[in-house]
Length: 444
Ligand code: CA
Image: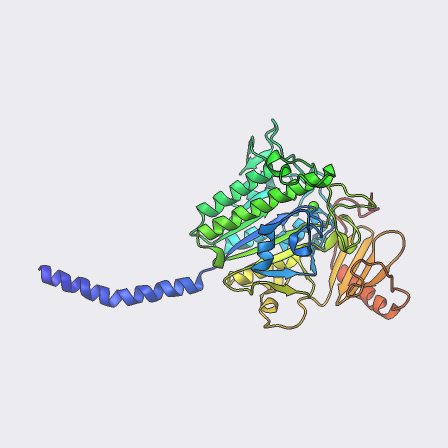
């Protein structure tokens, strides 16, 4: 009897042992990557180490560029908070569905007929979470947990204090709680805890920091790192950037600890340029060498620090110069997960993977377009067409003039005409703003 049992065990081991290991190998091969989208808020173009920043070290954010792809023409589709998020989450120009301006409470928010990246990833079995700023509507039906995020920790509006107060307006799921930690630290704590909990599932983590948006608040832990910065505003900004960089470092450390680095596609970018406005900066950010500010379609408003890391798949230290936009995050992530993108979704973003892997040498986008109230802009190759105030339409060659200082509209009318025509064709696919009126845009 014992012999027969031993023989049986041996036979089962012989038959199924190799099969099981083949199965494991296939499972490994087919493992779908996690997606982590880390968003900064109102960061200056100049304020990361990989863009040459000297007074604020950002070693963890820089490590994403070092171990991944840095985009020199990485754009967002809106020059301020909420429109950019609506474009990111839908993969469509937010003007397609009237989300041109920040919602101002009430019934305003991302229309619920727009399908979010979280809903797309829920449909293919991913665990999903938003940690941080929502800013896409306050109504119950617009709550992140109704828009595909299984887990949510954060706040609903466009700005929030960083230092703990007495109010209960931080949500865990749909429940308001009181937070005791410095907010940037709290957000990294929650992100790390989500990764810990879901280390064995494929997951989508949208980590939307409010740093370095106003109000400008930091703790001594971060202030004390900058004894040499005398300007109080810049010092506070530096402290907040440093907290943000630490938070990114904690997320990366947790992924490493769990052995997920190779299996995780990470995006990092800012939701818009620094709010340097006209002649001043309201948070201490610097957009140099770009001109313009948050709320403008000049490069300073829409060209942002933008990196992407996927250690298991993408080359390290690559610089990619063709224009890309945050609308590409959704289709790129779905492609990474092996999921199909359907034409009927009418996405404006594209899957960047073939371009970054040199399988496709063309530009991902023939043109990029923007509309923000009376402002309009387009980019084609090195050319940028922009109308940002009452001085008419300007044409710049960004290759020679990244600071948009030399208007070539009169010198190259044929280029301007073609771009204006293409912009009008694109605009036919947009609708009027659902709120905010599309009237004058306050540049101050
Ligand atoms: Ca912003």
